[in-house]
Length: 582
Ligand code: MAN
Image (tube, rainbow, N blue to C red; front, side):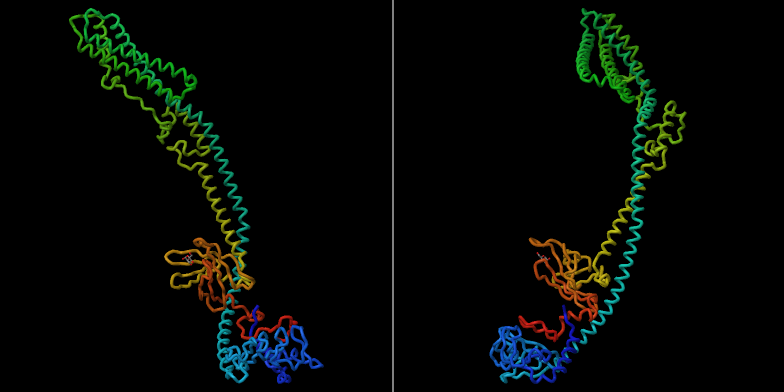
């Protein structure tokens, strides 16, 4: 705690007046205020201040150290451990250690020169001059303090109304937060319900969609099967023709073209046999596959594949017969050969042999599942049997808002999308409200001093440039060390002690091989907020000295606590009972 000088100066002056009568009798080096302590008892005896000994009063200042605490020699250097009082009239009284008496040095604390009294060293009394300067300095300080204190009061007014405002805001937010949370929970339930409904609907429409696909592909499967039948018939016609040729040809003719066709056919048969064996084996493995109910699309693909295989076989046999026809020996007139050529001739006009296909037969494209719905204007009757199924599904889809089910005709957003949007919005509101509440709670809970004056400093940023770095602090925020890049020196963590003049910022960037950086901000009274000096007393532990009106407390607040005072500190000898004189 500190002591204000003004009341002490007054106290001392009063003491001097009161002690005037005895001042002449006072032993050298004793403050008038202690005249009662330094007086003999009725027997002319005196007790050392630590109570250890009683000596004749006349032994005080006899240049012989009697008392272990040195209290018997306040005006000589015999003990060296006692205290000498300089009255410093015109300035402020002071105490110095008795070891400094008559040491040849004019102690600045004793501006009246009373510490050098043996005549060896002459010290002039400069108390008037020092006192005047000191009073000027003091006046300046007092002026600064007065102005700072005025600003501080404004800070406190601001801080108190700001706290009230923040509390009101917080209460308002807290009051609506339950409805904000409820709204988020409600939209979540709606979203869950919409999702569940969608799932259920998708499952229930799956069968309907399959049925629709069935109907959509039925005519195409039919068409494909007809083509397959046709191809199968032609294939067996060619097979019969080639079998007959092989069976009935006149082997005596040794017609090379006929022989080549028959051997080509044999190779084909051989290949066919192999394939059948392979198929039989694989079919045995997948009995389950065979039993599975196949979708319309699978059946369509099977029919297409079978047609393709049949046409491939036809193409091969067509080629064998064609080559025979071009090269056979017409002179032999072999009936079997002529019969086979007749089959070829009858078939050839319908066959486009270069593409192994029937003339006028185009590949059947399989339409997309929702191809029918792409025609926005399409009426159910346009879609034939499928139209009815389409209508049923479309009705079901719009019940749950399945906009994506039939993209072409559904323009409104789905129920799920709407619920999702509402939920996103409500949960964002909830997040924002929670964030705001936390921010306000933090502000309301921060210790801005007993009268809230420090609230004015929130977010006020001050900088201090030195050679290598610029140091900054945003009060109650973050402190930084800046050069080419910023290094965090920590964020506000707490006050140090209970004087409300030192703050601690912690959790800054970790020091290489050391602690996380931290800052102590020590505040002294000034009319502005500014950093006066920065040092790094220990690696990565920084000290900012700053001035601010926020610590220009009322003088009465400081009265017990003024370390700047020039008034002498209370002199108490070890073991001395506490006296209230000073
Ligand atoms: C940087 C600065 C200094 C600090 C060293 C520690 O140079 O942050 O203040 O002492 O790092 O390595």
